[in-house]
Length: 307
View (cartoon, rainbow, N blue to C red):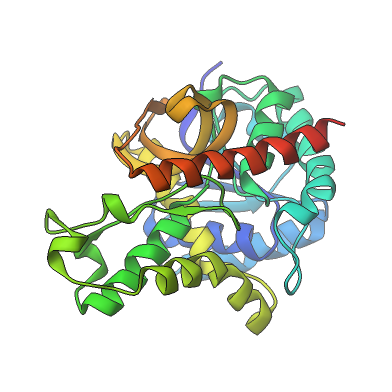
């Protein structure tokens, strides 16, 4: 089957899916953007709205569609799932999301999809694993957005305290995209200089602000959209352009830090084939222990989903 390298299908046109489609259009990343939703009317309306904006941007075809459209897509982005409200944790909606994700994954595969699946449904680590196990695609071709957004937030908050540009900061969050995530301060570099040699920061305050950022945004406006949509687009860009860039995304572990067969975030080399290689940066003993606790929390939640 021929795959259209410039075609992306987004399943789920809520705040995240629609924003991701809009961002892809602005960046000129794909010339063919298809939106699918349980409400075909909403998918069509979002497509028309984005297409109207596209008249002032780069040429692209944007439309509502059906699952048959995924057959020749390079990338399918799955954003459909249960939304969190207020202080409701991501893991608390896992059961509801899993039912939705399984249904979408089955329809994607029944349509003959053979590309790369990017999962953004919450809780994303569990939903990426549910999607991969349901669709049967190789794990390297099912990628969760994971802690890419958390890592961006980490860089942003470090930059604010250090009074430097975020682009000058190298920083990664590992593990769950959620309450047990690990802000890996030992890996932070500013122009190649380790954090402890550069300046003193409020580590506990920064880590807590990064972890709670999603809750803060949801309490203020009811949902998150721009940050996670940008993370989706960044992953798709790395795939579409075969960038072979390292991004912290949710992938199935294969013994890293003693963790196996579980989706969580580690730095991954991303290109046209999906996850090319998973990296294991040197962490402090405390960070490794925290990462294993994060894995344990995800493993317990995954076991509960399987019943």
